[in-house]
Image 1: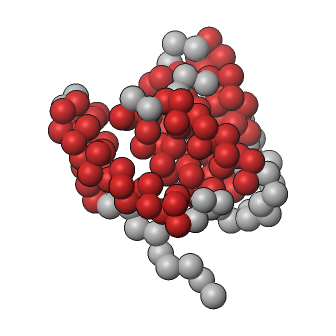
Image 2: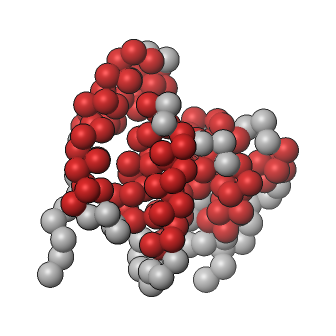
Length: 155
């Protein structure tokens, strides 16, 4: 049996758009609207790493970095036993973004380096232009990655 599809509410994407445009008040109200949906998913399936990561993604936008760190650690623990190769790059990417958002560059950078060599991982162009990596822009290790040539994908 396959689990039901997990749809992210449109208001989450609207909140991200408002955030990027600099409308903090609108972004916060939209993130708060999504919060109960994400929290219910974690309550219903507390060992589902995807649900843990999605809630961990939301928390920094609401100023709840410590809660985000806790959930990200929990998701990593649950993922440690996973053999889900199809979702591994996406899961690692979300975890790296969560580390970046919560100021844990020392954990984000090794994941980014790994993703740059994985099929369906990351490419340097994404790191260079995506606003999501802005929290790492001042980190010398991140700058070094951006200045380096595109790594070879390891199959």
